[in-house]
Length: 483
Image (cartoon, rainbow, N blue to C red; front, top):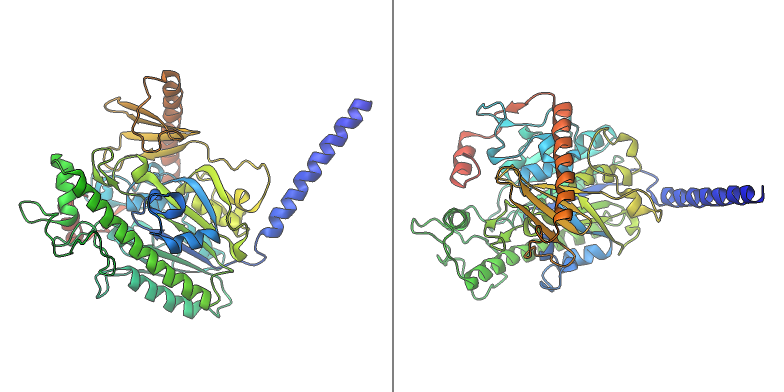
């Protein structure tokens, strides 16, 4: 009886501790729906941000200052290094192989010339927020985020922003953002603002260098008028990099380092523009009480694994920054080491605003709000994170604990890396640790099969439409994005 009584007291004590923790979490959550600003920095790899790396000091001082007010996820991944695939996963909470927007040109699986679109059966974050009373506005800078794919659902305004007179997108995005924020400032309704910045991405203008940076930033005395990155057909910029991928043409390390420096110049310019936006938000009294999310859809590689641009499943292309600034800067400075995929952004936002009951059933992302708001030993682990190659759709990666396992279902080639010891994935230990490889392959098989089942249950049919114009398709074909 004595032991039984002690056991009951222990159970009661544990229950009281858990209840107290829940009350702390709930007291930290906003009492009214906060404004939400969702910032996506296209092509920003994680190690290009100072808060994640010591190799690029003082290149992203505004993002770093923002991170000091925020919660930083140290091991965040994009599920596929492709703009529409990754962004739709952010909006829906499911992997690309489930929502269906994947592969070159988003070609419909039915074999038609139409593009795959999101079916009505899969709900997006703006759709849900709209029903909760949010005024939803989005500004984007790429054909791949056109409303017709499903990105426009739930938005009152969803507008493509073009380059300004200075050749850049960011300043124009900021102008649009500030104008709409001025309009919403005194509104009784909360707002959701999606901002997509594109200046870090490789340049598509045929007469430009691959990465165009502001004239305010001198990169090793490099001039924008240089034709150093052009092929024999006088095609430059992204065309040059695509041809290098196709031919395997030798390019010296000095030239590759210059490419990387130019890329970092674009990162620095975008960071400067973010600083202007954040300062304006503070002056308008919007910054402190808003929920602000900053992330990227994918990174960029510079032949660390044989290619340029972004298609493979290595860290250079799939490891991304993920930073949440909570209302009133709650838990500012916290860092979370849990593995997380951007499919968890949507449910986490709904959890953070106290509306977890509206998280759609059956999604694959996890609500990580408890990890950000609470101090409980709550089940907030993402578990294994699935990645998929943009071009070789048979090639996947699985991140689990300290390992990344890569497997191509066609070639049967496998790779295994210990990311704690080898973050650059330069030492393949698949044959050195055969039992780990075997276990990871089994987990990967289960994850891929689960996505296939989820695709069949959530999509129902192959929804397709003519989203891209003939001009869009011609341009994308010339860039290798479409067959």
